[in-house]
Length: 176
Length: 159
Image 1 (cartoon, rainbow over the protein chains, first blue to last red):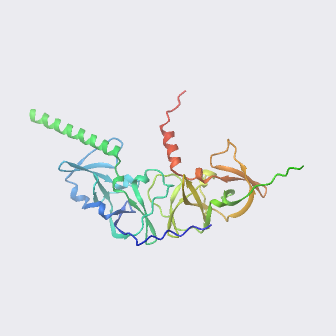
Image 2 (cartoon, each protein chain N blue to C red; image 1 turned 180 degrees about the horizontal axis):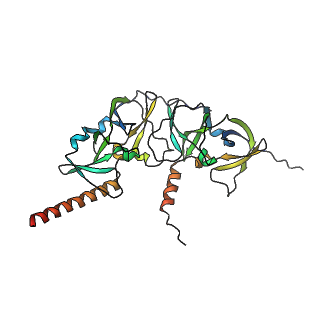
Image 3 (cartoon, helix red, strand yellow; image 1 turned 90 degrees about the vertical axis):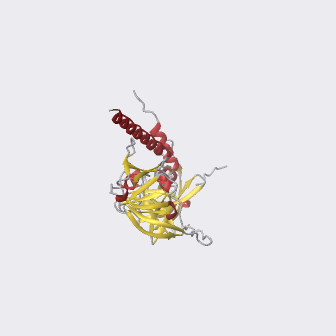
């Protein structure tokens, strides 16, 4: 018995992707999912500290009007060696800004293969699937897979607590 | 009248992991291929090493030696590409093996209740009694993840 040849699809649907590295590991993200690319230095003044119990991958939050963007350390999210991220992807339609090492290049993928069913843990939320590019296999990340609804609830609670503490401090200062 | 018992011979592929031999039903085997580059990326599923590219497909590589032998293979000569059932779906899985494989016909004895879940049965060949592997319980899949999650949630039994 031989493996059947992959199904030949009618004209390949292509998708623009950005290849990027986190702790040396290559990943891809759809370029339509990236709203902004910023250098990590450029946001260091604007970001405030946040600490949610059991959620070490988020240490900072960016406030933009009434919207909060949680900065996710990509290396910690994927369980890779800790690395100082140099760039930040602000991911469209999410509350995530992803800290990465840097962008490798932009390219086009013609085929996204579903993650094999053997992969059955958190990676199913992390990745949309896998793609083969230049004889290498790259996982394509799911922009919404960096923070689960439970993690967002934890972060919102931590944010609320931080705001409450800050306003109490302010009241204390003004009454003194 | 004499009653003759007909042996139900089935085809099996014998594979070698270290010093031991195991069997897998031949209709679950696609091919035996030379080792190729394993592409690794972050994930949380135990026993999965990464993936290989084979004929344009991306196949997971699952090292079952640790579960069967208690240690990882020091040398791997081939990947045995086998089919793994996930309910109604089927997918190919590449398993590293340490020697040539052999196709045999033998009669399988059913596994006993006390056998490990990865044992589909037993067969006798060349004076050896060989485990027939149940790949659906030996390799990871959603059902194992659910069982692990349930085990984690089970309250501790205290004396």
